[in-house]
Image (tube, rainbow, N blue to C red; front, side, top):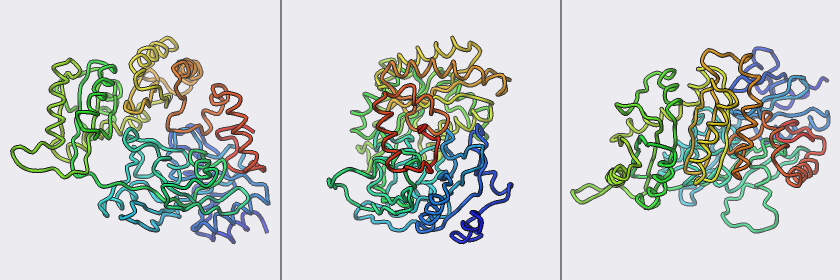
Length: 475
């Protein structure tokens, strides 16, 4: 019996894709930077099927590329070109297994779409705060495997902070059941954290116990024109007190990115009459219900008062505060469509970096200068989560350039940016992971002791090197 036939006996015809047309969507990444090949696309429906597939691959020495919603930015879920791997897609494992509103937890399979988790929590008057542009198609298994960030990290933390327990299929096919809904468990090494952010190189996350929060009852969203990134940092610092610690998002955007969104995304509009170089999208949320009455001040009123004071100090040039949920969503569309607009505009380099928040203003100035020095005609597209120091410090190709013309400049531009990031004590990958695209950069910028420790863990847990080989580390 052939290897593919053995796979079919485990997952059935519905769980196996072998034709070229059916396989193609699983073989290329969202950014279309990579096009790999695979023996088959395997779509198990249960953890037991995942375990059986992994056992077979271990015995046959066939490598496995775990894949969620395939929305990653760095090629971590894309197979290599040699065609000797399988892609193991978890999208059929899409059940919400339990929700405990009293204990504030939800148990889910890895293939549940993030938006479904958010909506399910809301139906029970709860909030799952992980929120990012791809939430309509990314899956929670991929979110946890890459330790996804998103727009509410400054208040709720990364994906790592939103999960209590996980179930993992190990590289030998055994199942580790770590589905514990415990906030305190001090019994030895924290195995959970080994797999969160490991990008499928140590095992396959199949289920998770997630934390949920009280659903906010009062919101305030504002679109604010500011004179500089320095003003954004000062505005956020004061907002933490003015909102009574209710700042849930604070996003910085430059005009170049806004122009691309207005150009390529239908049904969006500029909220302000005049153009400005820099903007902040700020959101405050509270679990306290909004009260009516002449003397009742909700978050919108508090935000309006705070922005008025900030305008007097020169931190704000102009602003608009959403009066309805629809207006709030319209403002968020301007932020969330940056990546899609950039893709439609043409080739670009994604620099998902982080620096200490107080250093953002200096980094923006120096990073822009470094980018322009490397390629004077390039277009810096700068946006990101100013509240947690994570900037998408991207470089859009000059207008009209294609990949063949732009690619020779990529190494020089990225090297200049990453050198500067490390000089600021920052990270070359704040939330998108390493995948394929940053393997060499990780090897260059991380210390020998860190790399040796990671390789020791990889060799110990995956001695056959069948779990997503060539991603994160070269062994």
